[in-house]
Amino acid sequence: MAESLLGSVSFLEVWILEKLLMATWETIYMVVVATLLSYLFGLPMGVLLVATSKGHIFEHSLINRYLGGIVNAARSVPFIIFLILLIPFTRLLMGTSIGTAASIVPLTIAAVPFVARMVETSLNEIDWGLIEAAISMGAGTWKIVTSVLLPESLPSLVSGVAITTINLVGYSAMAGIVGGGGLGTLAYYYGYQRYENSVMWMTVIVLIILVQGVQMLGDNISQKIFNNRR
Amino acid sequence: MISIKDLSKIYLTANQRIVALDKVTLKVEKGEIFGIIGLSGAGKSTLIRCINRLETPSEGTIYVDDQEIISLGKKDLQQVRQKIGMIFQHFNLLSSRNVFDNVMFPMEIAKIPRDRAEKRAKELLALVGLSDRLLAYPNQLSGGQKQRVGIARALANDPKLLLCDEATSALDPQTTHSILKLLRDINRQLNITILLITHDMNVIKEICDRVAVIDDGAIVEMGKVLDVFSNPASPTSKGFVNSVIGNEIPEELLHLSRSENNQSVSRVIRVSFVGASAGEPVIFRMIRKFDVEASILFGNVSRIKDTPFGSLTLELIGPQSLLQEAVDYLRNQGLEVEVLNNG
Image 1: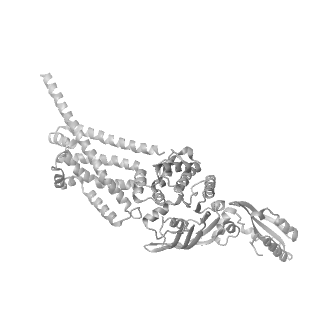
Image 2: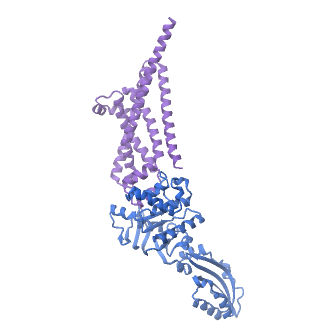
Image 3: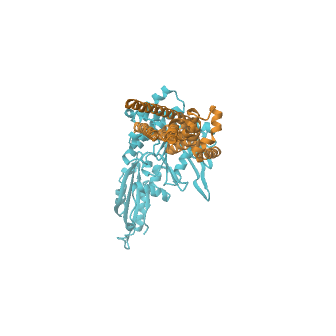
C-alpha cells in the first residue's frame, strides 16, 4: 500500500518533470527563434531610423517620420492585445494560431519595433566624430554602417539582445495563456486551472533561471568585447 | 594647391542669421604648411571642414588641385575625399579596430588590394614610430600615440593634402611638439601640403610657413609667419603674437616719465629682430652713435620654424630730436621698431 503510494507519487513527479522539461524547451525555442527573427527585421529598421535622421549619413525625413510612426504605433499596443489582433494573420501565415510555432509570429512582430528602438539607442551612442572621420575618408553609407555604426556599438547591441530576449521570455508566457505552448501554457493549465501550486512555482523558478542566465550571458559577452578593446 | 574664393557660410536658424564665414579668400601653395589661427567660434573649423565638404558652404568656390569641390556629386566627392587626409582633435579612431586595422580602414574604402594595403599600413606605422603597437587597440594608447595612428591613417591613400583640425589641441606641450615635428617631417619627406587650424600661436610658430588670422568669420591678416610675428597689424593678431612672445608691457611702465625734463624725454620702444639681424649688436651701435641712454625693460628670443626671432623692449632717454634719429637708425638697419609711448 505504502509502496504503491510512493510509486504513484514518484510517477506523478516524473510526469510533471517531463512536462516541465518539454515546456522549458518550447519556451527556449520560441524565444530564440523570435529573437533571431526580430533582429532580422528590427536591426535594419533601427539602422534606418538612425541613418535617415536629421543630419545623419542617409538623411531622409519622409522615411524617418513614417518608420518612426509605425514603430511608435506598434509599441503602444499592449502585447496581450497584439496577440489577439494578430490571430487571423498568424493563421494565414502558419495555418494555425495555436502552438509553439504559431506563437513565434506575434512574438516576433511585437519585438521588431522594440528591437528597432534598442538598436537606434545603441547606434546613437556613437561619437559623431567617428562617423565624420569615415566620411572624410570618402566612405559611403553602407561602409559606414558596416564598419563604423555596427562594430562600434557592438557591446551595446549585445546588451540589447539580452534585454530583448528577456522581454520575449515574458511575452512567451503571455502567449502561452492563449495556447502558445511553453512554460506559460503549463503554468496556466496546471498551476491556475488545476490549482497545482507546485507546478506554478516550478515554472516560476525555471523562468527566473532562464532570465538570469540570459542576462548573465549577455553581460558576459558584452563585457568580453569591451575588454578586448581596452 | 588650394584656392578658396569668396567663401561664405551662413547658418539660418528660426530667428537668427549667423555668419560663420564671411567671404573668405585664400590660396595655399603646393608643399607649404599653412596655418589658420583664430579664437574658438571664429569660424576656422567651419573653414577647414568646407574643404572636404564635411560642411557645405553657402557661397563661394574651392579648388583643390584644380578640382572644384563645391559642385561635386556624391560619388565624385567620395573619390576626391580619399585623396585628402584629415586628422582630428580627438583622433576619431575606431575603438573596434586595432591600430593596424585602423590604418587599413581608408584603404578598404578606396578598395586597395589587401596585400598592397597591408604593406602600406606597416610602412606608415613604421613612419610614425608605432611598429611595435600594431595589435594594440586605441584605448591602450596615449594621446600622442593615437594622433600618430591618426596621421598614419590620413596618409594611407597617398593624399596630396593633409587637413589638421586642431590636431594638437588635446595634447600636452611636449607631445604637441613631437606631433608637430612629425608633421613637419612628413611635409618634407612626402611633399604633402598641410593646412592646419589652431588657436595656439605656438603651433603656427613651430611649423607654419604662412598664416592667416581669422576673426569673426573673416580673414583679418595673412602672410608669412615671420612677418605677422614681427609686425602684427590687427588687434587679434597682436593678441596671438603676444601670447607667444609675451611682450606685453605693464601700463604703468609706459607712463613713468621718470627722467623727463627740459632736455631729455623717455620713449619706450619695441624692437623686433628677425633672422640674421638677431645676432648683430645693433642696439650697442645705436647707443654709441647717438648719445642716448637705453635701459632694457624686456627681452625675448625664440624660433619661428627655422628662423631666430627676437623682441626687445627698451626705454630710451635723451633729447627728443636725438631719440627720433636713433629710432630712424634702427629702422634703417632693417629692424621693426614700434614706439609704445609718445610722451
